[in-house]
Structures are given as structure tokens and as C-alpha cells.
Image (cartoon, rainbow, N blue to C red; front, side, top):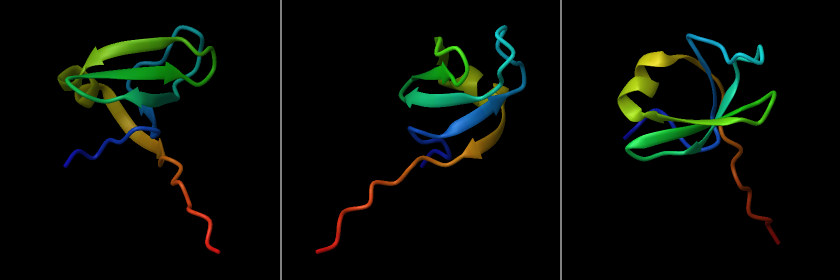
Length: 69
């Protein structure tokens, strides 16, 4: 099982040119799609390159809470 999940916010070793270093994972597979938290631009990285570049996990994904009746 991977330690990365959809919806997590991570920081990479190298920041985005807009000045932000917070990325939200929006697609997982052989490639990983990340969305910049500041400007909204998305990038696609091969999973191997993504795992090398991750510095830390900043936020866990929001869990869907079913309403209790």
C-alpha cells in the first residue's frame, strides 16, 4: 500500500515558480498529477520522480463522514 493518497497536500523539495510549495494530489497511478495550491496550475510527474521529490506530507485527505441517523 502506498503512503500517498488522493487529496493529500504535500511539499516538494523544489517550489513552484509562483512562489508556493503546497501541492494537492489529484490523480494517482503510474503518473501522479499535482495541483498548485496558489495558482491552480497542475503538473504530471512519473511516480518514481514524484516519490523522490516529496519533502513532507502537510495535510491528510478529508474523509467523507456518512451522516448518522
